[in-house]
Figure 1: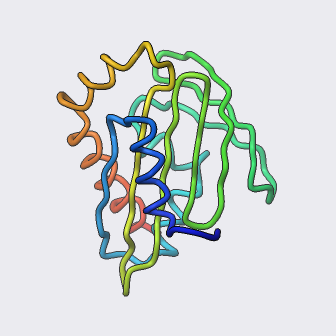
Figure 2: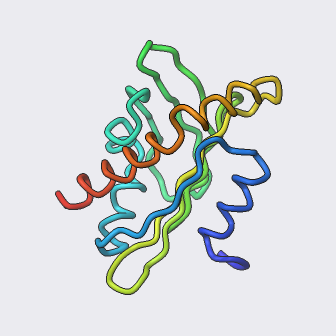
Length: 151
């Protein structure tokens, strides 16, 4: 991936989306272990994001994949996924979520962002940012740490 590092790239994306969820943290775990969790979307995403019950991703080495999500209520939706080492961008017609990671000494710098795509949902996003954005980000990072420590 050329240009800015993956974290900076995710910052720009989050700013452009006015994402209600954007956070960064340094984890005291090696990049390979952290990224193994994040890249395993099908196996790990339901453990990292509580409202995702299932995330089906077709096998293969392609950087662009078409996945299917099932939420906690059983609603299904297609996602376009761009997955490369240290970079994941998932988009449906309603949601954009990104994750980026870079090695940092013996640890890993990790960033996550999430946003609703329809402009009409801007007020909902602003409310989410105030009420739950930081709490959800902390829970996400704790879950990544816990899952990566098991590997």
